[in-house]
Length: 360
Image 1 (cartoon, rainbow, N blue to C red):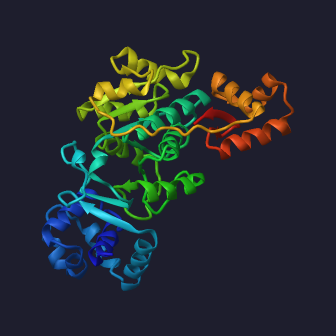
Image 2 (cartoon, one colour; image 1 turned 180 degrees about the vertical axis):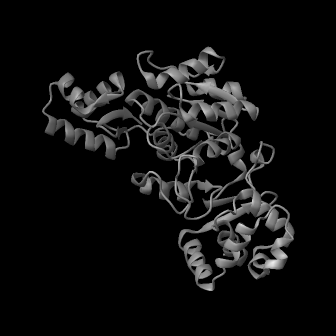
Image 3 (tube, rainbow, N blue to C red; image 1 turned 135 degrees about the vertical axis):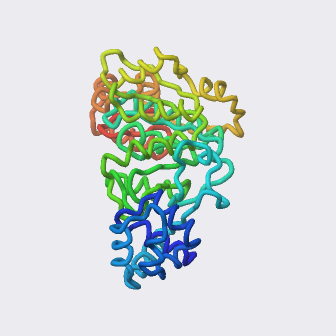
């Protein structure tokens, strides 16, 4: 762990020291330790840093606080990248208002330049979750990194789809990288950090307040060659991401949805306005002119006659509710539950929240 990162996290956590003021202070003092050691007189010389911020910096000078931050960084394996550092995403450097610094759990690689964002509604339908999971998995199988925001619904399904396919995924947070939001995604967050990256422009300890998310969306689109909106209402934050993508020169895609579902109104409107309609993963790859690196071949798995019937019915009707499947096949719920467990163990199906079943 670089000691400089400790001072940067200390400075960034001080009230009033956001990305812009952090940049001003770092430009003036060259490193975080110099700011920690600076006097009030020296701090007053920095243009744009007002007395309130100077007061906060001076009041927060504490070796005990530095040690707490040091322990937290070490515990979570957090690293920070300045714009201009090796490893800072090339795709972010030319967007409007690029983050001066990114805090990260996990790693970013050169291959992440081949990234596609998948975003959508938190209150997604079973169809929307299935579509996000399926597209993310097929992108991951072809060596494409999947970017999303780790929210409920579409985001969660996209991250899981990429991971279950053995691929990489990047989660961009609207809070500090030491905070899991939503809390129920704690296991997912750990897996993303281990196999991809969890990143944020916000300081450690920053809570997920609503005002953080619109700004966060410019990073999701900025990291990606294109943005796929799976489901979105007419006032959805996903439409903000799509708008930012267009401003950044990225491609915008949308998955068509049920016209009776309000969560499809925004994505259907995007298609009306010229977004590329997505019916398969090839629609994304062709438009972005991406040549897949690899396609993971599925190994044939032997199934019993009953297991085969259940699998085929899920394939035919997916996404399908557990109880509906039981009724279709005329099977006792206890018996079909055990078969579903076996199919999950064999890696053939996925059970989404609400007992919705889909093919992996």
